[in-house]
Length: 362
Image (cartoon, one colour):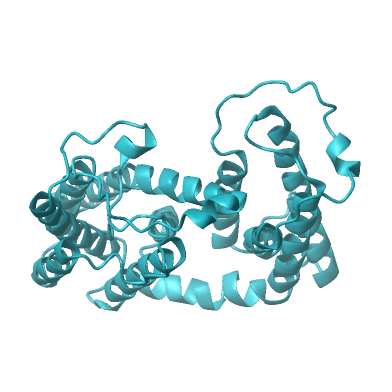
């Protein structure tokens, strides 16, 4: 009889994170061809002539969460050494496969240095996960107790938690639009349909921010238990923190509040004024408003003119991992509202059928 994993959240989070890592490593997923090079000669290549310390540190940090989640997902009866070693080897093999695939992408170069950084990061994370993963992800762990207290049960709660994590990741993108997502126009290279005018941009930005704040706030409410507004406030605060961090990193000369444009400040005030009474509505009404607001915000982000005054730090273009991370956040941010709409629809349909069934029984 196979041994079942002791933790419920860790496997789902590990799989989601591994998919994100794979996309970042293989970005832009275009131009596949055989370069005519031996598949694994890069493993024995000498120390590279050009070494960027920031890229190496990024490789370590990128695989640290993967090692942690893999170790936490392993059976609880496994010992510390076994869990740490198995998670490290698994993550290193995953990195080896991705580096080998980079041989077939003209814009990527397979590197044994990258593999070493990834394995080192996975090893550090695996040590942390093997030691403290059970206390965090176990059946009686802190994360599971928090989940049981605040989130709806079953796979619905897990899916909602993963979607919130992806939304926060999308807020780390190099854009000044706070809470905005669903920009397929930029992902597909389609030019903006409207020319830039300051008054037009401010109006779009205000309505976009207000509708996105309302949608995200009600999304959190729909997947949480009870009427406590604290989870909603925490997620919105984390989103603002992520956007502030992104603008501080990507914009020159380190402008952490570049996202707080005149339109965004107005939109935050209007969105908060709409969200507060909406939190008191029945859940099905909240589902409908969240979906409608998300549709409106997604339409606006594809119509809003591009801001030509963004002070993007061009020096970051020299770091390949920064560009890969930007590609990942852009991809996640572009597709997030469509996954969120499907989730809200399924959850709302289940709740509607549940209420209807209860009424028939009465």
